[in-house]
Image 1 (cartoon, rainbow, N blue to C red):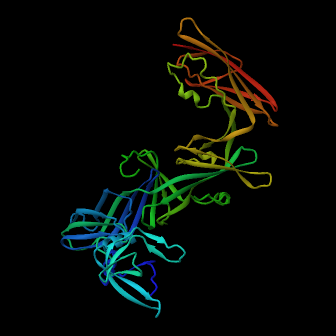
Image 2 (image 1 turned 180 degrees about the horizontal axis):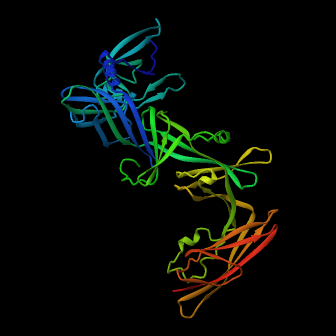
Image 3 (image 1 turned 135 degrees about the horizontal axis):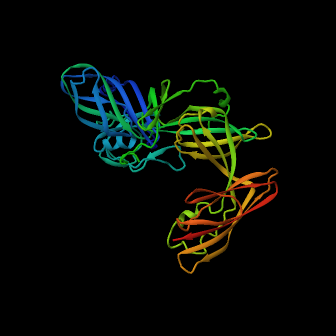
Length: 497
């Protein structure tokens, strides 16, 4: 007889197992509401009808998220709150898998279905499973696989990787199909109770994504905000109420540590009612979906949050010759009189789009933090991606500025042309020379940013053009440059300490 290797495991569940599943199904949710935070955290509130015996009894709550924080659970009977209390709680998550099934049957009798090659009929042999093996492995030059390392005692002999299809008599005790809670409850009012269960869970999160379409002149844009929901909690929520919380909610971190939106929906959304209603919750923002929705396990869902059309916008250019390098030296005693520091030059001129989040502009609701992708139509009328940036939580009536990249036809150049240390040893002076060249076919205005980084006490003693002191660490020089023109900004700054 030609031997063949194991290629599957068949589990036969007895009548008792099926009856047990029916009993658990009676405790399914009758209502569920989700409050999801944009910090990988969610509050889940369920209503279930439970048939609870008098006195002490065990109650099983099936279909619980695998990411539940068991210490956050709250339970109450809506039928009679004073009659039921939970004395003990167990979170059970030892789920069925092939390896766990085999481990439970080590040392027990199992059956192997084999094929008689001559008669082509199957027959069964019984043996004792000695080791479970290490998983399915392909058999070279064959369509079969074998379970590497399985050992069984059959007819008084030891067989390694025994041939046949393995059959187990039932589902071993302790293994379950889905995560569940088991409670020891005390009840003084036997019968059906309408109950409320709430708890925190991870891996059920949301974030905001925005799509903006600039017009031809870069002076207006259409913007749609989308909520992207991701459910990796291990369970599915059907017909769920949905609320989203935006804001920086403080949490003690112990337990919890895409689809591109379609641009064609922008115009159609002009006259539609918002899907979310925005209200305040403490010092955070709450967005409530005005209908119920399904959120399946291992699913990403997108729902429109906000839309605005013909929002006034402005394109601007910024040249920051030191970029963020100055932050490493800012007001550091060791560097304040070092001539060689601050001579670096970044040649890139950044291009930005700014707009205001107000009702007059077509928006005017608090915008949750998220990524904004910006598009613009080319000469053929087709949309092209031109950059993206992230915004933080932005209240209404605040201005947003998106960095979309660097201008191709505008170049900056920065140099230190003079440095002087005074004899007192408590003062230095340096002169900075900045050039900005415009190779575009139209004039532009570039905001030149400079950062007095050497010390907190400083003074501009000479400047070739007007400037604005933005704050203690930034000076702004507005420079208008004609087409194919170069402008030079020279200034002298003195530091004292």
